[in-house]
Image (cartoon, helix red, strand yellow):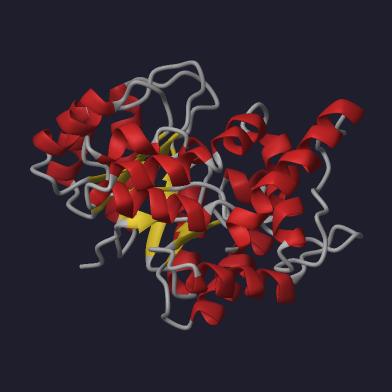
Length: 299
């Protein structure tokens, strides 16, 4: 069974100026992740603008990633939909084109209790062939914990990973690992902002943007090996950027794509509409921060 540990970047979808998908740039992003020793890659998620892609486009980008990875790195296909039936249809199609793991965000269009989420994900787990990664992204609200993880895994052993993105979650990480006997791995999202504090709590990986893959790889593995000073030095080199770009999801997209363009990985930093237009101060600060981190990202 596939074991994921380390940094799992969310792949941004590169577009041409006319808004069409730039497949050659997407292939270079996959090669970039392989070169920087990603543990796996995930798309199309929030950081991939999945909510701006058609269903055929969402399947196409997974197919391209699988083709380009050619087995060099596992591909996680994210099949988000508030309808369990629609999510399953997309998940089956992603499995058919070679996705190694299926990821789904908890359907939180409206408030959902634990029993409702268990019923939804039980349907998903019973329908897919491979492992499931659940992302619970619920800004300002409660996310699932040890009881949910233990109950779902007991019924559906192919529920293998849980991505959480809220602060103060070290005790919950430990509780989930204890309740599932370590059989459900917890990954930290939110750009990797909580990496330093959560590695020692037992997370099995981090799911940040692609641009910060290399320094966060150093942070994660330095922490794992007990080299705390090295981890801290690597983390402080990118933390101001992470804090800045996570003020708004669309700002995150703009900054990530500008960095990858500056690194020569993608041709164009276009973000699909609807998106935000950066005010002059935010725009200047974004460019200034990018210039500060580029030497670290290039080294």
